[in-house]
Image 1 (cartoon, one colour):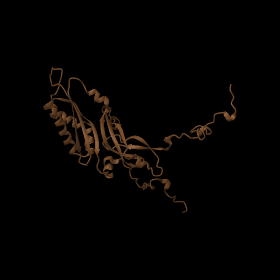
Image 2 (cartoon, rainbow, N blue to C red):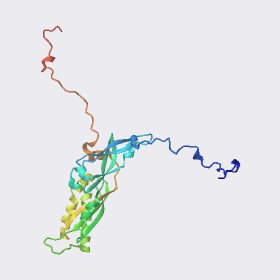
Image 3 (cartoon, rainbow, N blue to C red):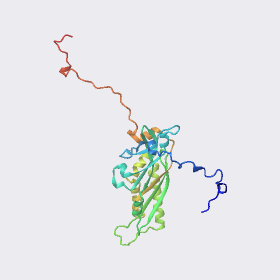
Image 4 (cartoon, one colour):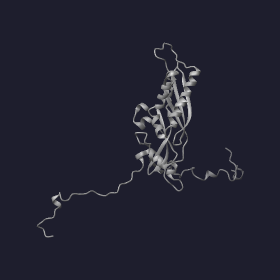
Length: 275
């Protein structure tokens, strides 16, 4: 082995490898659980749904200029309609709710959209039939602009022996036209709250099915998707109206209760006693 004198040994460049003297990077850093800085808020669904308290959402506590309630506003929640209405038959519909106002520890939400689960859509698409889709932009009476998507399928006529039930292009055009007409008519004649009530039992789909009977028999006609495009200027009173009793209830003044003292002999003064 060759040993070199000190002055001949290779030297490290000055200013390089500064971290040699220091310990491991981030050694003294404490790992803090981010959820220690969070607080939980209740999600309140509008009056259209039977279950009003539908979940909780975390948010970072108010610190400095970052206000918790401001961070919650605009947050969108996706919930299953089966949970909102306690009805397992509606499991394939997903409802979007957007937080518009925060009252205490409650997020007051408003309807923001609707969609179908992928498995439901896939289960409806089959061979030997025609799939017909249409969409239209509508404006409700209270100023909400939405895009409605409709889907429907042709079905066999009564006593039909033929395997297939395909609609020709002219019939498809007629059906699409009827779909658009009915969606526009049903949506523009009411406010958002009433329109959501039409989506839940699929009133519009049944109406389209009935109207298209003369063109070609239809089945599985649904409003498969609803997109919110524009909303009117935010109005707290309208939101509280949609929620009904979900706002913070006013605390009644404690006036006490009238007690009938005469009925209780223990409360009567003793006649023989010196007062």
